[in-house]
Length: 99
Image (cartoon, rainbow, N blue to C red):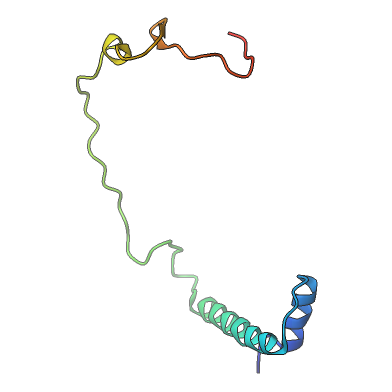
């Protein structure tokens, strides 16, 4: 027995303000029924002794170690800037903001 009927699809189409043909109603009823059956199968498989997971296999992120290294001095970083103020890039004021 179908979990969703053609009449239910027609009702949903009316609520959604979709104009569906008779063939489309039959087609969508079949597709929605398959979706509902698939969800029901997943619900059957889920057991209380199985922990929830987002992946079938455990995943571990691989990051490089944080190491302190030589970086640019403020003067070097700002050397190519068209305008500098108080060791920062100077940019035009926008949106009338106060300084």
